[in-house]
Length: 150
Image (cartoon, rainbow, N blue to C red):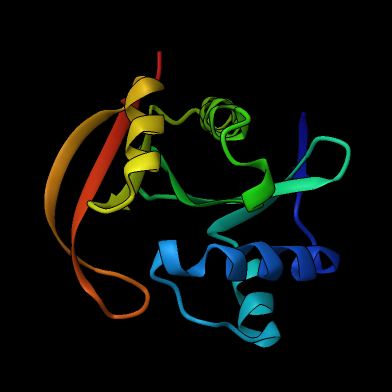
């Protein structure tokens, strides 16, 4: 597997995978213009993961503190449970280290059990449980995971 920085040409793939997973993400439909604006945000970086074809995308946010936040991880449903999540976490940790950052932070919701298992099995510690509001306005219990990088 490999990854590359996402570009505007990747928007159809990003939108397709996001829409395939929108219910699990508590997401909202987003227009091309919204996605273009998100892709151009200099505090974030989007990446596409390839096997032979694009299989996933993820976004990281560079925080003012010493952390890198995995803001979104989307895998095409036909590629679920094939190690792509672990590959992305390893990649995110490498990106953080390259930037001299000391922690990776990830947020999820109480109903995203697959993500919770991935983060826990990859050495992330559950640091906080508390109320959150999802992208579609639902009130949920949010989980914050963190891994200190060595």
